[in-house]
Image (cartoon, rainbow, N blue to C red):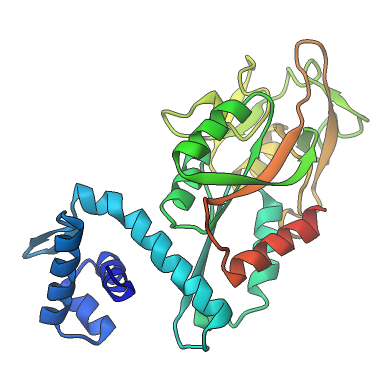
Length: 304
C-alpha cells in the first residue's frame, strides 16, 4: 500500500467518478483503475462498486475510508510542517456544539491565512455529529463538554469512536437570557424562578440521548420546552418568548451582539449546578496540523 494509492482512493471518493478523479490527478484512467485494483488485491477487499453512473464505496470501502484518511492526513500534516511548500489546497474543518467562542477562535485563526489557498469549514451541529465528523476525519477537531452526569457515557462513546478528549477549561453553568428578560437584574437565578419561562435546548435528533444534550439538567421535567437547531434561532426565541438556556457562561459579544447576558445558576438540593469541562476531541495518536495547532492556540487564548 502506497501513499499514492491512498491519494487516488480519496480523490475517487471525493469526485465520485473515475474519469473526474483521473483528470484531477493528471493520470490516465487505466493507470488509476490499475492502482485501485492493486490496492484492493493487497487488502483482500473490494473498495468500490462500479456502474455506469459512477463509483460508490462498498461496505468494506466505507469501513476502510477513515483509516485511509487518517494515514494520508498524517502524511499531509508532516509535509506541511517539514516539507517544501506546494500548491496543494489544504483542508481544515472543525465540528462543534453551539459555542460562539469556538466560532470566534475559528475566525481569528482563519484571518491569518490567505483563504483562497485553503478550504476551511466550521460546523455547529449535534453532539453525535461532532463525534462522527472527527471519527471519520471530516473535521480534524471537535468541541464539546463533559460533566458529572454525562462523563462516563461520553468517554465510552469517544473511546469506541477512536477519539481522545483534551481539557480546555472548567466552568459552572449560567442562565443565558436577553437583557430585557424579567430576571435579567437578578444576581443569580434558581430553577424555581425559571418555571414560568420556556427552556430552550438544541435539538439532538430523534434518537438523541440525555447524555448528548448540550445543556445541564437535561433530565429535568420542564413545564415549557422549545427545541432549536441553531444559535440565531435560539437568540430570537430568547427575545420573543423570554426563553432561557443553561450554558457555560462563555459568550462572544462580538458575534452574538450585546443584547444578551449570562446570570449565575443558583442550584438547590434537587437541581445541582455542575462543573462543565469544555475541551476538544481528536482522533487518537494523531499529529495536529499546523492549522489545527493554531486553532487550539486561539481557543486557549480566548478561554484561559
